Image 1 (cartoon, rainbow, N blue to C red):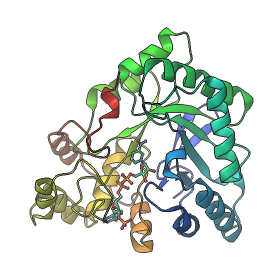
Image 2 (image 1 turned 90 degrees about the vertical axis):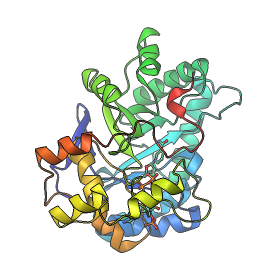
Image 3 (image 1 turned 120 degrees about the vertical axis):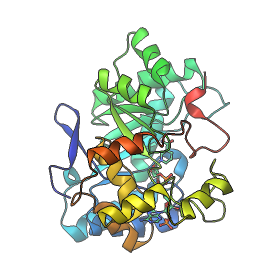
Image 4 (image 1 turned 180 degrees about the vertical axis):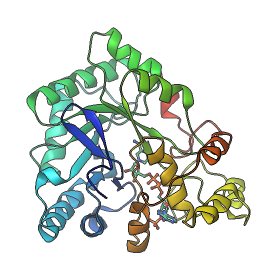
Length: 304
Ligand SMILES: NC(=O)c1ccc[n+]([C@@H]2O[C@H](COP(=O)([O-])OP(=O)(O)OC[C@H]3O[C@@H](n4cnc5c(N)ncnc54)[C@H](OP(=O)(O)O)[C@@H]3O)[C@@H](O)[C@H]2O)c1
């Protein structure tokens, strides 16, 4: 990746368009995965309190940065506050403490982006967002945002007199394009960050225990030799994964592919030597199915 493969999050803070996702990587495997990711060329790593692998991410960052001769400023790190669904809302002080605990596990003094991971209750959101605003002012994070928020959730923050987030991390891929939300984010100058870009792949989250809302019928569709993504990938001489990730970055969304397989890791980073033409981008627009798959039964974007 070159320096141009970035997007400005807020003045002076750029987010690399390809990040390394770490959801479902066990903590004891995460250090090696992150170290390998930095060696492969990733300069952006996405983790979260609830992934329970922040220690491994921190260790992998230290090893990988030393090996590749990188400074802290060369790598963009995101973590997220877990809202403790159904539990007592975190106050803004507790939110600040959660960030301190994440920083401690990561072994960092500052993250580049801190996000509220999901919605779950109005009081909680406002309290937590106040905490994130404080964290931003204190310099413990260079940017702040939300994840899985819809337009109404973001309007609520503004109506409470609070600043608008720099980013909203949401499930975005050709099967879940969210055109209304993306237009809203663009109008508010909020960067959409895409997760689960690879959800349409038949190989997506197939390991035991990797639950999702994906049905057997959807998997079978992806296995058909004439599936739309297989056809397009063949046309551009790339893999289906590269085609799906290219759709994201070409749309302007930072993407967060997760793989512990070194070949796939490199493949998922190699997205800038081809361009999906306008007719194919239009055709992909017609493949939208609406709701996402990553959260299984729960749809965090519809929570009150
Ligand atoms: N904010 C949120 O609520 C939220 C929700 C979900 C995810 N995320 C973030 O976004 C990241 C990515 O999302 P995700 O983990 O759901 O899924 P993803 O990166 O879209 O897909 C990962 C799955 O695809 C497989 N895969 C990866 N590269 C491949 C390739 N080149 N060819 C074939 N298969 C490939 C992986 O298997 P192998 O590992 O075996 O290669 C794994 O099963 C997460 O890790 C996390 O950091 C955030």
